[in-house]
Length: 367
Image 1 (cartoon, rainbow, N blue to C red):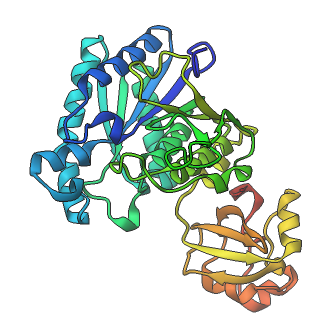
Image 2: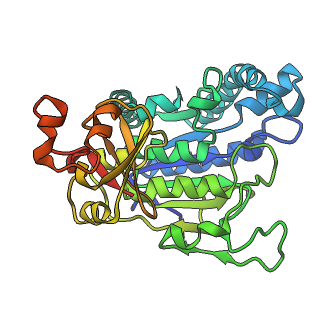
C-alpha cells in the first residue's frame, strides 16, 4: 500500500535527512537520490503536488571546504558550510528532477519567516503558487544566516511547519530508521516497532535525541516535535526509512501519527509556533475555562514571564504545564498590574479603557 497515495493526498511534504543524501565522506548519494526523484515524478504524474524539505547542505559544504566535524565545530563553520553546500545541493536536485521533466525551485527560510504571521502568509503564498505551477520546491533552513537563537535546529520541525503553510494533507519524514520503537533499536534488539500512534503523549518517553548517523541535527525527539505540530493542524505524519532504493514507491514499514481534528488555519499556526516572547501562568480554574472555549481573563492569571508586547505570541502555562498559545492583548507590564484582578477593576488600575481579556479566545489555540 502506497503511503499518502496521490488519490488520498493532493499535496505532500517529504523531508529527506542528511544521512540519506550524503555519504560519510561528504559526497551526494546520487544513485539513491535518483530513485527518490523517480518516485516523486511518478506521484506528480498521478496528480500529487510534492515539496521537498532537504537536509545536506552543511555536510556537502564541509567536505568542499575541508572543515572538521562535518562543518559543525562552530556556528561560523556551519554557516560557511551551508552557504557553500547549498549551491551543490540545489544543483543536484535540479539536475535529477530535470531529467524526469520536472522543474525545481529553491526556498531558503529562517525561523522568523514562519513564526511571524505576515511573513508566514507570504511564504504560504509562494509555496502555493509554485506547487500550482507543477514545480517541486526544494526547501531548507537558511543556515548561512541563522543563529542558534533563531533556528529551527532540525528539518523535521521545519517540514511540519512547511506542511501547515502549504496546506498539505501529509508529511513523510524519510530517515535512517523505519519509525518509532518502544526503545532505541540500535541499543536494544528487543525493541518493538510501533506502526500507528493515536496520541503522542502516550509515546513521548520512548524517544531519544540521538541521530543514528551522527550527521544530522535531529533524532526521534525532533520527529515527535514535528508530529505534534503536524497532527495539531490536522495533518497526518509518517516516519519512514529511506534506507531502501525507492522510499516513496510503497510497501515499506513506517510509523503513522494520526491527525487530530483539523484546526482553523490561524489557530493551527498559533499552536505550531516554536518561539514565544513570554508566558502567562494561570490557575486551574482559568485552565478549565480555556478548555471550555473561554478567553484568558486577568482574574485567573498568577504570574507573568518575559518582556512581551501587545500582539506577541505567548505561552499560557497551567498548573500542569503549557495549555495554550495565543497573542497577548497587553504589554507584559500592564498584564502584570492586572494579575488576579476582576474585569471591573481594570480601568481604574490602568487609567484607560481595558480590553476584554489578556488573551482573547479568537487569538488562542489550545495545546
